[in-house]
Image (cartoon, rainbow, N blue to C red; front, side, top):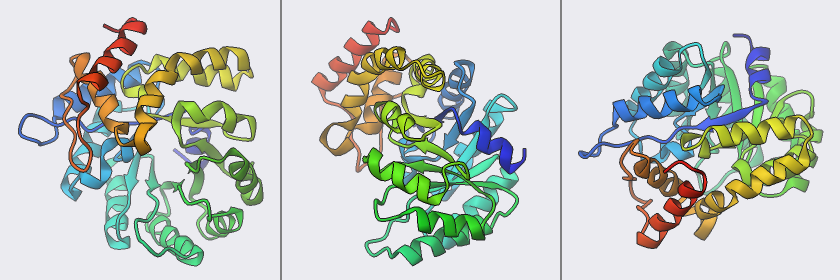
Length: 301
């Protein structure tokens, strides 16, 4: 797959996997494979392992490698697999090289976790990671509103394997400006705040959106994407309203239960345990009930 191939595929639903755990707290490999298989069978063509919905920051390097292997093996040729990489530069570059060996089609570089990030430092971090795998496509995960088009353009100039941006700043006006300053046609721009952000971001230049909902009901984000791609805004907003309650549960309280809501839904569907690792926590009884109501409304229970 060439850089252009993955760039084109990013114009779709970019699903982020959960990482199911077993009763001993280890990765539930069978459950993980079942969720990925169901997701791809449901029409998802791009799957990201080791994203934030995967509880990336709670996983050991060995666990991220195992999760990626399962994702690649399960997806096969049916979907492009992207590997989330991050932490310090040495850890991120090691993970990127592993992703290349494991058969991933690209890497998604997590926003640097550091209390002091300069814009030049942001470029330097991403350049070091992307340049470590020049033959592998790279997607930027932008969560910092200070990062602008100039920084992204400079990075693409230095690293031609950077093909897309997952933009997760909750400001469509800023997104529109950044995308145009960096080059709207130069990269594939993905709305990185899932279904609720998708219509607004598509209106100003996004070509795809991320989804954790795809773990639970892949047909819903696939239908939403189809409506947005075809310019059927009324139909898109009907679907948006249909999934709104679920996504609002995930976004509540500073997204404290972003992953917990998805895993609760999967648990109620009998696909994996609801367990998450600290600093996340499982839902209380009212939260579980709210998820059940939504699953019933969708005809899944």
